[in-house]
Length: 274
Image (cartoon, rainbow, N blue to C red; front, side, top):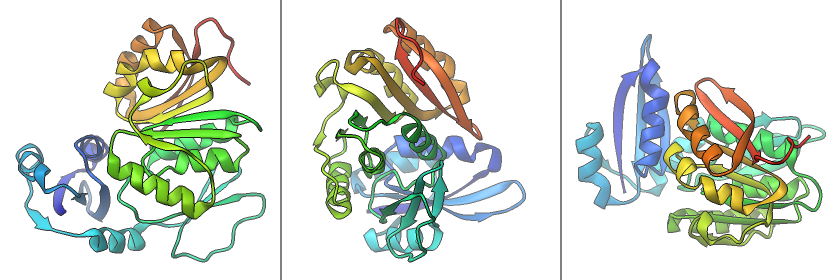
């Protein structure tokens, strides 16, 4: 495992962070901010990535271990109220749960999905809007598993989670067990999911994969289902939307926080869910 520190302009920070997640980062912490500059520390758990990462992003690699990431996460992660019903809190904090909210405990595992990133919050808010008692959710690119856990806690009867990263699958399994929720999770992607099974799909992954898997989003959805798709910025909307429309889907809603976006998608021959 290694880490690198990178300096960048504030205006470029979000794009850089997105590129680092896509390149295989397991954790990113913002260290310092100046007038127009920011410094971030990026963790990678595979030393095999080191040469390529340094060639692409620069910086100097420093040996690290899981304890480094945990220490930084403990310093920077704070309790968060998301939507109207969700309260996300690090496992080492003891603040009481606000009335009327479900308590979702996160740890500093090496997987994306602590609730701190804009795209995760956008997906959580959408899950809160659309999960109904008895619903089936399919979570592609589950990361920490937080989206599936919240769906079950909000009343979903079934949730199925997947990730192409075996380490993320291991983290998600541990988190599901710790939370006491039953969510089958497997190493793989949307192509392994049966058609017509999902009331709700959620995928917080890269724009390239959102577009590539567009036929699967439409295939997996029930006729009146909805897909919650995020992990991209406003500039990616045209390409993602075109792929969705070509596959037989229709964008029924667009939501954003800063430059990040989340799309709600239905089958093109259905009306928008309430």
